[in-house]
Amino acid sequence: MNKLNGIHLSHDKGTKDCKTIDFPLPKTVVIPMSQHMGAPCNCLVKKGDPVTKGQKIGDSEAFMSAPIHSSVSGTVTDVIDYLLPNGSVCKAAVIETDGAQTLCPDLKAPVVNDRKSLIAAVKESGLTGLGGAGFPTHIKLNFDPSKTPVDVLVINAAECEPYITSDYRELIENTDDVLNGIKLVMKHLDIKECKLCIEENKPDAIELMKKKTEKIKNIEIISLPSTYPQGAEKVIIYSATGRIVAEGELPSNQGVMVMNVSTAGFIYRYTQDGIPLTTRRITVDGDCIARNKGNYFVPVGTKVSDILSHCGAEKAGKVLYGGPMMGMCLYDTDQPVTKTTNAILAFKEGRKPETTACIRCGRCVRTCPLSLMPLMIEKAYKEKDVEELKKLKVMLCMNCGCCAYACPAHRPLAEINQLAKGLIPRK
Image 1 (cartoon, rainbow, N blue to C red):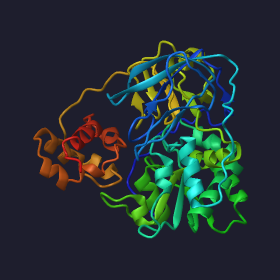
Image 2: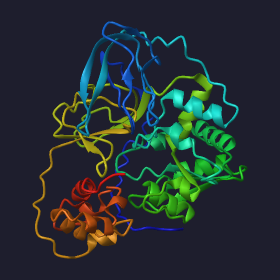
Image 3: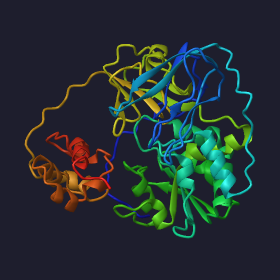
Image 4: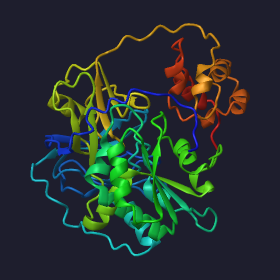
């Protein structure tokens, strides 16, 4: 087993045995036109328009984009300027639900019989990577096999962040969908081998998948050490294949494609029913959740405040999209669930530790999976030394937070690394 540095966390997977259930349909949803890396979509609806579930309400001709579909049936009550968590602004459709959840009459299962039709179907589905990064999946699938042949598909089911169990539930509840999605992608993209990677703290999922694949020679189930950030793309590629994705490279440059386990399951389901990505399975947990912790199928656009109200956490001090290590803190609980949301975590407002001087202990270096030097990056950032930041390979940082977690002086190293990247001119 190839292994990189990292840290050991308390996993707190208290919802792992909570079967996914449907979240109560909200009265309104807010659906932003940017839920992916790349260009935002143009809003295709206006105030007063009726919509149906699965209807395309946003699209773009830009290369890096993915269409947006309505998660509910109802009426568009407004099209607003919406402030995204990253500070940019896009349009968002506000829809009042009618309770009927009427499916769009244009929906139908796509015909997928080759590479081209698979990529076209995935694009039309609006799928972005369900691991949280939001990279449009059809672009990932559309590699040039003559230039960057891909021979290994790595399925990421590590789910190494504390609390989150949504991918685990996909493995347990939709095992056949996951395997059929893997087979579909391998067949039409001519990928010879698959490595399905699961952290060892999920022994029942590992046993189940090994049993299901015991007669499938080209799908290998790999049990990974429960070390954070095992699920990070570069880390899981090295753990599963021993291949190193260098600075500036994509996984395809090393003959690898990484796909989240929930992404694989969705691809197969879409080829069967033609229903686009309008619902997310999310984990709801945290020490402020008074009731109804668990996993839910939530319509995209559902306000986080509706979820907190349902779970008795209206007075939470801190609410996160995603996990406590790489998740994003919400500035407003009226922000909606998007395609990239895999968890809503609500916590009491904890005391922020006092930051003290660096004692040169080196823990940040020893825990960094990519062997970066956060203490030197911090110095170069303060001096605005762009050339030194380049030499220190700051752009390799994946903002996993291991350095800040390990620092006994409580220095905001991960935050500084991210700010330092902003000083590097982009091509």
